[in-house]
Structures are given as C-alpha cells and as structure tokens.
Image (cartoon, rainbow, N blue to C red; front, side, top):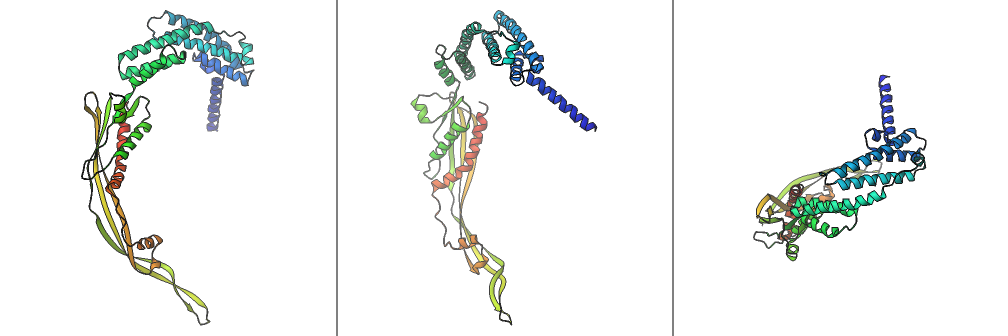
Amino acid sequence: MKKLNLFIAVAAMIVLFESCKSTGMQALTQGDYYTACLQAIDKLRSSPENEKASTALSQGYQMAVNYTEKETERLLASTSDNSRYQKIFDLYGKMNNIAIQISRCPAALQIIPNADYYNSQLETARNMAAEECYRQAVANLNIGTRSAAKQAYLQFQRANSIIAGYKDVVNKLQEAKWMATLKVVLEQIPVEGQYKISADFFQNKVFEYFSTAIRNEYINIFSPEEAESINLQPDQIIRLRFLDFVVGQMRESRDSYEVKRDSVKTGTYKDDKGVSHDIYGTVKAKITKRKVEISSSGILDAFIVDYRTNTIISQQRFSGTYVWTDYYASFNGDERALTKKELDLCRRTEFSTPPPPQEMFIQFTIPIYNNLTRFIQNFYRNY
C-alpha cells in the first residue's frame, strides 16, 4: 500500500511538472521569458481557457519587454562585448517572433492585444550585426592559421545568414573554408618485390574511404595529379609502401579417413509368406582428400608526413597473409556413405589453376586495408 501511494505521488508530481512545463510556468520561473511566452501561446492554441498558460503569457511578455530594453541598453553601453550587436539583433528578433505568434493565437490576443513589433530597431541591429560578424571574420582570417580560419568561416556564415550576400561574404566564405581545410595528398603506392604488381586498386580504395568515411568538412584529400594541377602546397602527405611481397611455393598434402552412414537400404528379402521386406544396414567408404596451399605475404608501411617540415607525424606497419587453398578427393567403397559435399569433391579430378600474383596481392591486402583505415580514422579524428 505504501509503495502504491508513493507511486501515485511520484506520478502526480510528474504530471504537475509536465503541466507547468507545457504552459510556460517553469521557463518563467527560470527567467527564460522568451520560451515561457512561446510555450504559453502554444498551450493557449489547444486550451484557450488554461489559467497557467494565461498567467505565464501575461507575466512573461511584460518581463520579456523589460528584459529586452534593459539588456539592449547594457549592450550598447558596453565596450568590451565584441558580439553586442549580434545579441541585440537576436533580442529584437525574438520579440518580433513573440508578437507574430500572439497575432496567430486568438486566446493570446485577448491577453496581449497590442504586442510591440521592433521592426526599425531590428533592421538597424541587422546591419550592425552583419558588419560586426564580417569585421571579426576578416580579423580572424588575417591571422593565417587553420583554427582562426575556422572561426572566420563560421563568422562569415553568420554574417551571410543575417544579410544574404553581405559585401563580398560569398567569396570570403570560400577563402576562409580553403584556409581552414587540412589538405592531404595520398601519394602513389609502390610495391617492392620480385613481381610486377600494381597497387592502383588499393590506392583507389583508400582514396575513396578517405573521401567518404572521414566525415569532416575541414579535411580534403587529393591525388598527386590533382595536387599538381592546382599547384597545391599540402599540409600533410600520406605515404604508403608495400614491402617484401612474396608468393610462396605450392604445398600439397593428403588426408585419408573413413565415413559411414547408418540405416541405408542394402537389400530385400521375402518372408515365409512371400512378403518382401527391405534390409537396412551401415555403408562405408574411405575418402582420400588432397589439399593444395599457396601462401602470399607482405608488409605495408604507412606514414603521415608534415609537408612543410618533412617530418613524420605518425606511422604504422601492417603485415598480412593470404593463403589460397584448393581441394579434390577420391574414395573407395559405397558412395552412399558420402555426403553431397564429399561426393562433389570426389567428382573433381585435379586442382584448380592457382591465381596469378596480382590476384594473390589483392586478396592479401584485404585485412591490411581494414587495419589501415582504422589507423587513418583514429589519426584524423582529432582534426
């Protein structure tokens, strides 16, 4: 009974909390007058007689007006706040939005019939805020570092959102984005060893991975050809090199074993009344299974290098092995003892033709690729 009473009390508190929250009362008590007004208006649309929502709007609107006027005066008098006009612009924008929402809610209009619009103040603040963002962005861009360029890019975006196409902001956005972007070149991948092997397919896979999986708008990868065509001075170079790739000798082995299957029909007989009956028994066979293996192995060295200083920032070595395997078999005995898979294997009379070194190389790189992409992902996570 005590548990039931406790549950009811907690449920009642939750319902009361959600009720206050949806009517705007909670936001009002926390000093968030803008949210309080919007929540109250939204509640009045569905429940025009709601007393809490009416109180939240009545009190919240006047408090929002007073706060906007006093905060605007404080910001205009401030000489240390570099974002004061943006804040003023946001304040007037919020007040205009409250007025618009009130005009669209009959119950709210009865409470606040003459909500103020701040159109002229908003337009003045709009121009000042756009110029404020633009100046700050230019100053950051002139610093010349990637981190400052990121800030410049965001500030140019803000200026453009306040006034679309402000001054030359479209060109400045491109300039800031380019300066903020880490430019990485993936070099051609050589393969050292006795075989004439191409790693182009592997390089293309790494390039594709970098372009799609590294979800960072401030990182861009280039091929050597792309970098040369635009005379790019990159920030970093990824150097990959395959070492000691070898294809081993063919190794052949055999294994013999017996198989059997029970309850197989082996014949029939007639009883003394002439009735036929099936005879069931166990059938056996001996399988000789032949296996051939060819192993390929090698190493990939991966380096991430600072282009300007030619120093290694990070490096990793990956080793890999791929074993090509093939089988065929023969048997003596009753084929009914064999499974379908064993029977199919026995129908083969020789091994398949081994793949060429290039194909062996491709298969050998599959696990290396997985390890390399994890290395790349982990490294560029910090950028």
